[in-house]
Image 1 (tube, rainbow, N blue to C red):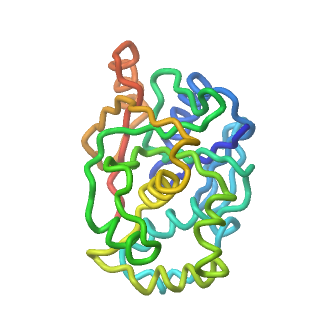
Image 2 (cartoon, one colour; image 1 turned 120 degrees about the vertical axis):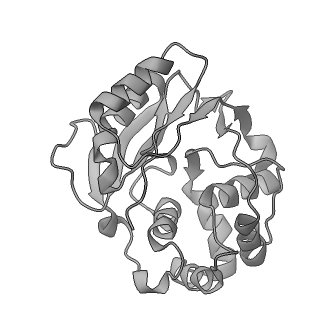
Length: 241
């Protein structure tokens, strides 16, 4: 059993019904669906529990010197304590187009795409955790199943508390050394628990980023690929500066 978290910014509110529909139609075995967001959307879906980011994790944003909103969202995913111990994070720019198994043969699944390896991610994880690209392929794929006890095991022996971890993490982040929560967690698991997981390649179509999406554009885009061999579609929006 696992919970699902949709991570959404205000620009993503229009996408949430489409993301929710893709979850309901293509994922099974989950308990509750949450949406972590900076403010409440004007219209809430009945099947989603909406929680404000600040009620999940409070951080002094002035300490985040590089891409603060992006880094904060990573901390949010890693350190939240709202859900069940197993929780699937789904960014609000991903749609499932086909049924996808999150567990197979009683083992959790890593859903792997085709994202290239990016050196700054491993500069960070090697410096802070002595974890490099252990698997040799990227774990970045807009979705990740986390286990809270393994995150605690990753962080607490070295830092003793989340506060100490955040302080040390923030102190090393630069434009050439910054985290990817998916690369960090995935490679930690592969280094120490590789036999306990399945590694599945899924087909992801990454649509070029748009300034924004309309409901009509999203519907047209989904219908275009609903009968294709694609497992996931991305629907990214530009981040306002």
